[in-house]
Length: 292
Image 1 (cartoon, rainbow, N blue to C red):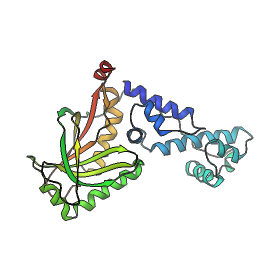
Image 2: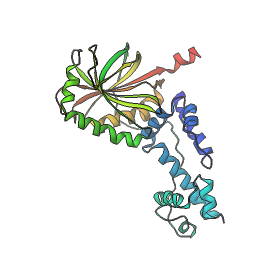
Image 3: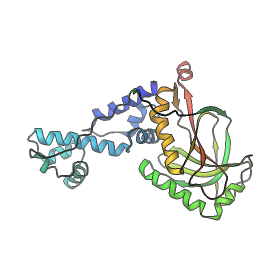
Image 4: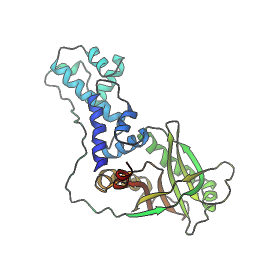
């Protein structure tokens, strides 16, 4: 429940600063997580990126002002952070499908995007099976690719990375390093700071790091483990989405902000479907409150 409160407080901060500079870091602090993880969680909850949400909310407010005041288009553009009329026109048209000048006319259809609020909702949704696992720290070795703070861009980068790796000999090389029984190959998102975000494809191993590969130690943690079936991209993204929307707000846990793990059995090059697990590190809200 605390996580639910913190997330809504972060959205309140954004709403109060639509006509000012919005700091992603400040919003994340309010939500009690890093900027990267706040943007990631936000994209799963809202279904759009944080930057797109802010753009839609600003253009919604800009449309109201254009129709209800005598302010010039340029003044409203400046109010919502656009120093160039061209960039404001482009953003406004992207949301409403018309120019800001045209929006001043009556009888014009505009789009209104309401503020986001995460709350309890009673539904007849399907069960989300999970188990809790405690694991000691362990080491993975594999190859990695840099990610960005833009969640939408990352969701394009990662599937393409998997595709390229699975079509090359190095996928077999990675799998051969596994010294676990049964062997598993992992997809791992690692955030250190805005300039250091990587996605790894690797295996748990104690073997030496081959040339051209990297290693990373996954910290000891308590993990919520979700099993799933189906296409790699769609099913894994859906697990994260349901974790943020359905499981975490009511679980009594907080997101730990550690690397997220996608775990697949080593079964050849076809990673497009089949069984997989998603491991997400969490902390107990009660344990955190006692520590405070």
